[in-house]
Image 1 (cartoon, rainbow, N blue to C red):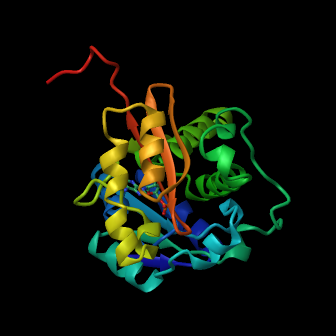
Image 2: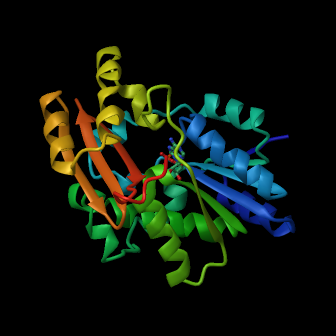
Length: 259
Ligand code: AMP
């Protein structure tokens, strides 16, 4: 039976009674197969699973993106029930920011790269909410998607920096039929943009230089924030209209490729 909880006090009270391993999947809702794969993994590896649904205002550097972010709580709860999640925590914004965001957690190295160059304040908002959620959940394991690799790496660093006793498990990116990572923002693409989005994975995975990929994406009508290799991975962020798509893959060095 899935229990939906909105009050943080109620969750904290309940958490005290849980003695078995807890697997935690934090999301902003509008659940898709990528989220469901994290929930499935959490269920496999823990006696109890917690899903949080919270559209975190402080990590949106673009007010329009925050306003239009898809909010589908009822449908998400149905999916959570089908996935046999034990607890869904869906608190109100004010509850998570009793300090009005006066207290913030920042990282000053990796967060300045890639997404950090395009989204000022994003990682500080993200790390701040994740710290709050980690302290509320007190989970044995936290499940994150490789799709947001920089986010996952920063969260792992956060747990190490603050001695948080939660293991960070990074799970593979789930992709749709043409290789585009599932994302809540995909729902905002028009049918024409969705067709055009096919070209993004096709080019991103091609055996071409970042410069060449960028050039071809621009030619095909994408606004490109970056296509860059960093520490053995290729990362990209592009926009179709005001919908932003990101992806990353491990880059296999030439000569190491197997058949
Ligand atoms: P979000 O709701 O977009 O904040 O994502 C919540 C979690 O789901 C994050 O850890 C994401 O990295 C993960 N996630 C989002 N999309 C995917 C995907 N396509 N495959 C795997 N994990 C994903």
